[in-house]
Length: 291
Image 1 (cartoon, rainbow, N blue to C red):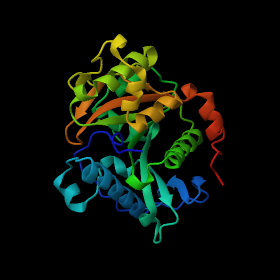
Image 2: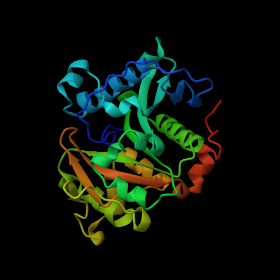
Image 3: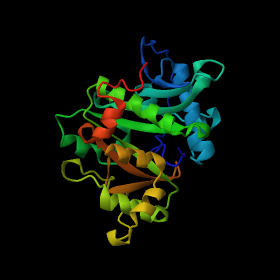
Image 4: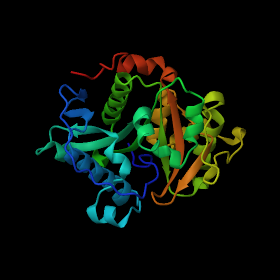
């Protein structure tokens, strides 16, 4: 799994987790071999996840964070204080749990977001309009996804999705959304892939959503008849391909994030749209990888 689609835009406000979270009993969401997925239990584990994010986003992808973040070698913002942090740990690594974190996702439920100023993705996309069309549904945001290079494998991705799925079921979520990214700040260099998304998997009708008008960049860069689907799929970042396999849709316009050196698209995944193949695979009770 490459690092070309693991983040959304940075938020300038700085937050340093300071309190220890209460440990959770029986909170393992999945295991495959030596890998395990669960939520972060302590502030030190969140700090370690922020260090993993820094390694991927800054050292590998060239993001430019705040001076304090660069000095501390941590990717952090105010959202870290109230989001849940999904971790993948390699239990074969010697040391404490903080030393074993090899992947992470940041999860934000709608009820928590509304108590803390809204969703993170709303800084780029018209999330409020999407929510207003679905007052009876409960949304969760997926963000800050990253995996260390040596662990970009099928089983790591499966564990991350197992964790997301178990979390969504536990909290009664109706839909997931979040940013996914292409490397670089020139959408034109991804014309084939972006045009494929626009013509084939654009969210429509009640699920339609675009970038905020002052940030919106066109994804319709090639006519439909000029798009070779096979080549386009090969050009998609692995994370986005994974979302599409589950049944996700994509927003109508993109956003260029110069701070993170990416071109962002919005992924929208109603729970009801997840294909039966994956519902059966991960388990209707989220028990596929639990042990």
